Amino acid sequence: MKSLSILGATGSIGSTALEIVRQFPDRFTIRALTAKTRVAALAERIVEFRPAMAAVVDAEHASRLKALLPPEVDVEIGFGEAGYVRAATCADTDMVLGAMVGAAGLVPILAAIDAGRDIALANKETLVMGGAIVMEKIAGRGVKLMPVDSEHSAIFQSMAGQGRNGVREILLTASGGPFLKRPLAQFDAITPQEALRHPNWSMGSKITVDSATLMNKGLEVIEARWLFDIDFKRIKVVVHPQSIVHSMVTYEDGAVIAQMGVPDMKGAIAYGLSHPRRLPLDVPAPDFARIGRLTFEEADLERFPCLNLAYRAGEAGGTLPAVLNAANEVAVAAFLDNRLPFTGIYPIIDRTLSGHDAANGADLGQIIEADRWARETALAMIRRQER
Ligand code: NAD
Ligand code: MG
Image 1: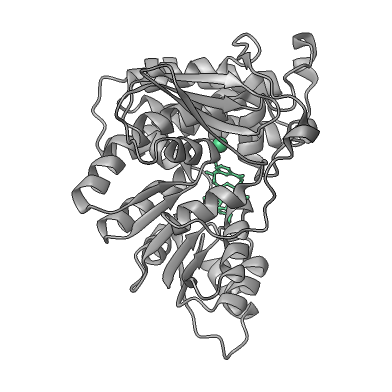
Image 2: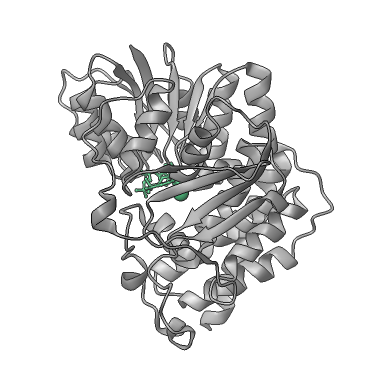
């Protein structure tokens, strides 16, 4: 029996994780559940899974949540960063699933590691911002860090039994998103609605837009650098529109090991939660004869310049990846709000990165300050454009 705290329990990953818990009640129990503002959805999950602790974004949502719960439900409700940290470090928890979106994951995940919890990580932004600190703490505390991102789960599985010995390269596959074939001249007219229509995956809105710009793949390159301790030159991206090969590892003898599956996050989440065991899931294997062909092509960097920004920030290191992430979060939110065109996302991130003084160090305080600075800077640029 493994006890879990799920941070981001109302989202796409969190909901799928709870489906797995529901399916295997003899394997998992829930200790804590968190959300940002969706208190009704969280209340339902609290009633069903009976965690000891829950947390939401602020005091107002905490009292709204409390009002929704029947009196017989006994749950401690916290709010804000302190509340998320309490949920992440809740007593008698074996593993914390980081399934919230964005920079808000960093501090609670670090607290969970400090408290000796194993981590299953979907929240890639945590590793993008603070990869060095996270990995140092993971090693220092001797806890387990399981990737949940499908590509990184695939890489992890492709290294099973072999470790990092003899790895030549990591090949991250990218679907290419909804605009792989749209003429570049029409990119200016892309609407949020179109960007939110991903051809293969059903996910939260932020990561879906990131998949349309390929910034998601850029964030994943940085995530892979930390998870697998490999330099950026040996992490390659290949576009694979069918999303069947979830990623691959090339070894020094030229052998390539890949992990395949249908595009469904259930497999990667379940593997992250139950490794080294595989769970009997209601997920079909790919029907290869029906799929017919798997294709691969190079990523077009003129179409998807955000991918290059991620390599640039990742290679520069320090606080630049945190700046990249924060500027991207602000630009994506503005795009979804119809305040910035799709083609405006890249220049906001590019100019925020260029304006950042990278000469500072990268301890946690400096990372948080860089995140704050980048949000303010990117937002100011967007406001100036609106005038
Ligand atoms: P989502 O938008 O569906 O859900 C996000 C969850 O985080 C919700 O429960 C929400 O309440 C919570 N949340 C949002 N903002 C928050 C904040 N500021 N503070 C605390 N909680 C907050 O997102 P998702 O698609 O489930 O993605 C979650 C994470 O997993 C992201 O980092 C994403 O990149 C990563 N991921 C998702 C998928 C996928 O298939 N959805 C695949 C790989 C990786
Ligand atoms: Mg992914």
